[in-house]
Length: 155
Length: 134
Image (cartoon, rainbow over all chains, first blue to last red; front, side, top):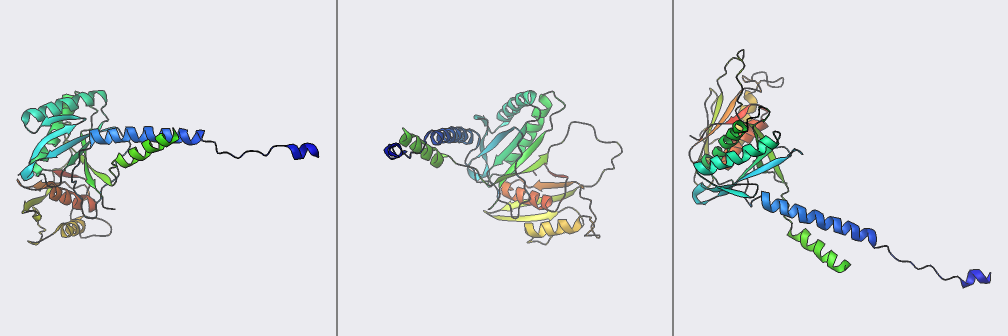
């Protein structure tokens, strides 16, 4: 009996180790995600169609081409994977050649096209031709040559 | 240390810009392969889009069915849906895989081109493409 009474009370303390582990994982996640967003996505006013029939992008590996807007509906440049290409014939040829190299490595690569809603179509359509040319330049028959047109779906 | 870790977590959560709500339309570009020799050519239905002013636009169709002069994208969708042959709409003339070409004019804005494309996809046409700029 005396032995029971003399026992020290058990201390109640939270184990912080799993919480710190989870917190570090969250930090790593946010660091990686924020870098990807910064490199791939330019801040654009994407089209917002009424009652869109769009679908969620799949899990396939993809590369993003941004059409950088300029005044009067023109395109200032095209950006892909952190590289900027001028909005002229030479820039589009360089864009096609760069994409062709990516297609050689990964023929299943998807291309997401992001363009500002105010940009005129004649500055967006050259990207279609550049992607077609890249599929041809890659020399691979298994390149699908498909573009994903990115829009914003209203919540 | 845990304080610093929490501060870092809050910073990255606040600084991260998520692109929520972005969705896609799949657009098949012309293939390099040869066309099927047994495939009969079909006259594509062209949707001609022109933009005017900051938000104005006009829509025209190349086929027999015509839109009114002030037609909007909702009316375009209704017309395309009624024109598609299906079990529900027996009077439709076009198959779901009938070629539809969105033909934006020289100064057409991307948002108007995408609205027309959306109307066609929403009406459940499966063969929708873009024409070179007019």
